[in-house]
Length: 124
View 1: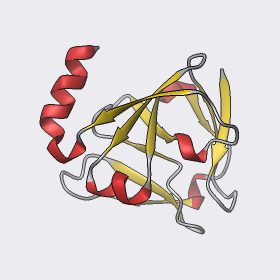
View 2 (view 1 turned 90 degrees about the vertical axis):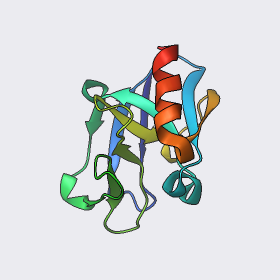
View 3 (view 1 turned 90 degrees about the horizontal axis):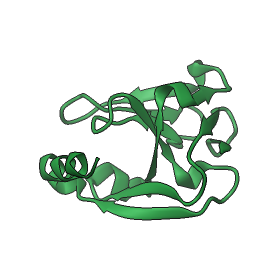
View 4 (view 1 turned 120 degrees about the vertical axis):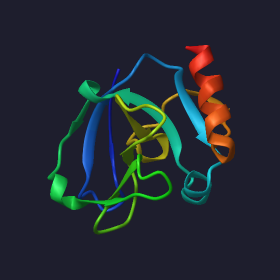
C-alpha cells in the first residue's frame, strides 16, 4: 500500500510503501516521542521516497547521537526520521500521513530503551 504524507506547511513531502492494513505502529514513551506525539510506522529505506527537497529538513541529535531526528526547517514538524532502533528503516509519523490508515499500535518503552529494543528483537 502506498501512502503519502509530510509536514504541516507542505515543504516536506514523502511517499512510503507499507504492508496492507492494519499497519503495525509503535507508541514510544521516550522524552522526545512523548512530547511530540510521534507514532512510529517503520518503513525500510528503499520503501520511502522523499518527494521534496532535502534542504527543507534540519537535523537534531541527542543522547547517543545515533538517531537523526529530521524536522521541517519551516514549520518544525518531524514527519519521519532515522531511529537508532532500526538502522535500515525510516520511522514515519503516522500522524503525518495524508490519509488515515488502520493501525495496530503497540507500546515501546523508550524510557528503558535497551530492554525495549531487546524485547522488540526477540519478537522478530
